[in-house]
Each structure stands twice: as C-alpha cells, then as structure tokens.
Image (cartoon, rainbow, N blue to C red; front, side):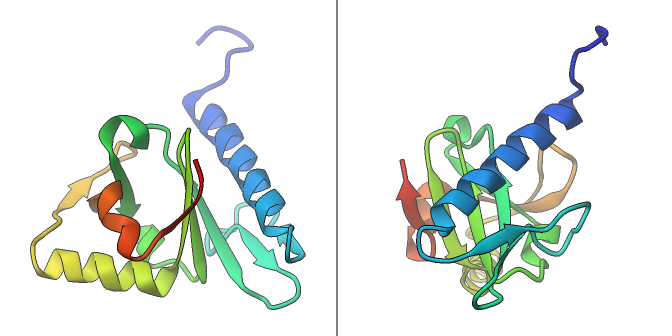
Length: 139
C-alpha cells in the first residue's frame, strides 16, 4: 500500500461515518439524536427523546446490482430502525418489518441465502421488492 493511502477498511469507515452523520441530520429535523461513540455493535444512533435505536448501513454497490444485502448480524441487531443508504438514495424501515418480510421471503424460497462482498452471510433482496416495508426518503 502506498504511504498515506487509506486501506479499504478506513475508506469504508469514513463512508459509513459520513452516512451516519447524514442520517443524524435528517433525523434531527424532528428529533434529537446522538451517535454511539466507539465500536458498539448493537446500533449506531439513539433518539434522545424516545430512546429509539437506529442502525445505519451504506451499500456502495446497490445501484449497480439493484439489490440490498441484509446480513444475518444486521437482521439480529438490537436496533429499532434501519436506515439503508446508497450513492443515490436513502431508505428506512422498522427492523421488525425487515425481519418479517425477509424471513417470509426466505421461507417461501423467493430469496436465497448468499455470501456478501465482505464475507458475511445474509440475503440479497431486490431494492424494488423492499417497497412493501421500506420507505424511500431521499433520491
């Protein structure tokens, strides 16, 4: 690696933190929220007034593939809400709705278990199929 060049992990972290800040900005129009500092795996943001917890995921290749990847760790998170970002859009949903619909799709064999580009197992779901349970708020 060239001296001063960022690793893939550092670039991904930078992109993820920028997305978390964008969600904070969007969320703070009606609520006061704050970011969890450090390596906290359960969720990324918390609404100060109601305690709602938020997981933020950014998918750099979703526009190319037309799919979201929902990893097993994501589906097991303690967060109440998911904000899923792409280079051109932001979608959000209640985590219980996500678990229900992805679980139903897997049970009916409409979606299959796959390995994501980071080596995690989960489900690849066409973005167009998420409109039943995800709301597009940007893009």
